[in-house]
Length: 295
Image (cartoon, rainbow, N blue to C red; front, top):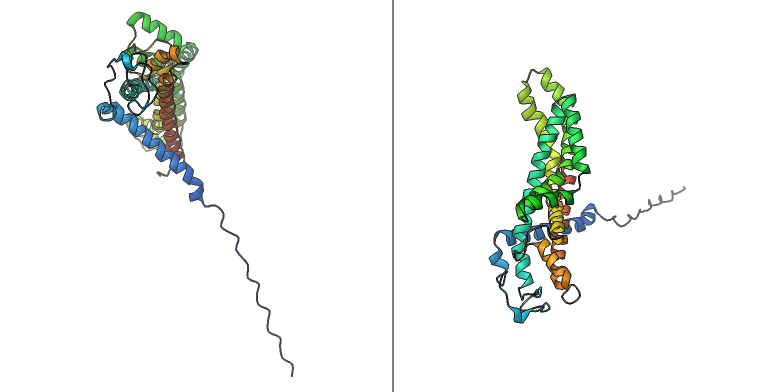
């Protein structure tokens, strides 16, 4: 009698080590997002409650402490008048953020008017709006700032208007394109077929879908406006000393860059970190909007 040999055991397949998970891939992005939110929150706190973070009066002059390097008493050093640079950066957040918000609001408001007129006003209105946008694109923002300053003088309001008009054409072109695309969408045709009145279609269907991308642009626009305002301040066309404003501080420190580098470094790095943080938040909102998932 023959005996059957035991069947060979099936080989055990060793599973390869798990690939890096999506969580690991997203970890640096999540950390970067939270850091960006922290920086923005800190700047907003400095703008709203500067006395909570500042250690000195930003306008207090003490010539005996001029050009002191960063130390425990003055973390960011002092300027040519002995004023504490750290406290001036903190108090300058209010002016810079006000200019950024005001310029962005003005640019978006003008963009909405131009974009809606071009997208819904018909062929002739669209042609006129397109020409206006092209003229605004071709007009140098620095020249506009010079004209406004010559007429109205240096002030935060002048910077708001100049930067707002300079950023308006980019927003207007995007709003116009969105309105034209949404107007021809299938759900708008379905609303018309159901007999909805034109006003309801405009307010409840076209406008919400056309303006959705602008919610992402707000964060990016504020950062861009602050950089523009700082550039004007650096050229001496912004808020004038002794007012604490980041661009004006850069302008004041450029003459002493070799002997007091901290006068330009700390306001400059603050502008970079704040605008970079707004960009990170804006990119995250854009990805969430594209995927339809709020994270």
